[in-house]
Image 1 (cartoon, rainbow, N blue to C red):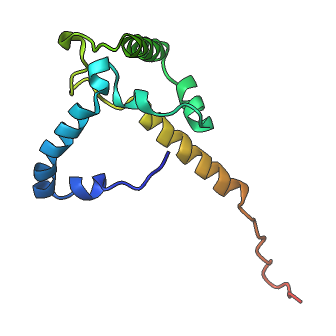
Image 2: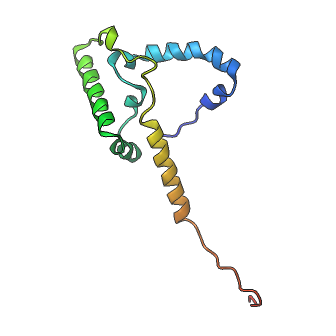
Image 3: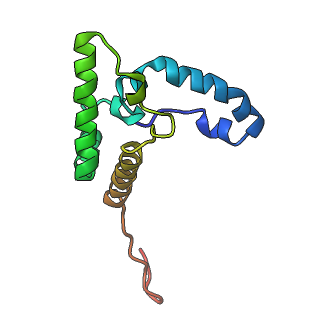
Length: 131
């Protein structure tokens, strides 16, 4: 899930962010998933174990809403139609709901791996000689 990203670099530079914002808006609109009522995190492939665990951690309402959006988009795909413009996902509604959970799980796994590979060394007592 963790891919290199230029986003932190761009966000730290306001002039570059202002320059890239129209391009970003154009790209998000041309991607077409909003016209099917989907949100950006609905596009994350579910095959990985981390994503499966993140889906289990969703609240029941968020999980239901995700399934509803996916089924509705699938139906639109089968009929080769888009949703009415009033039902498109608006940019302010298109927020990440699964990515933060995925990042949290990845951090937990990295911490667990660090703790599992931890070696403990006993300090020699004062006055004792080491051979």
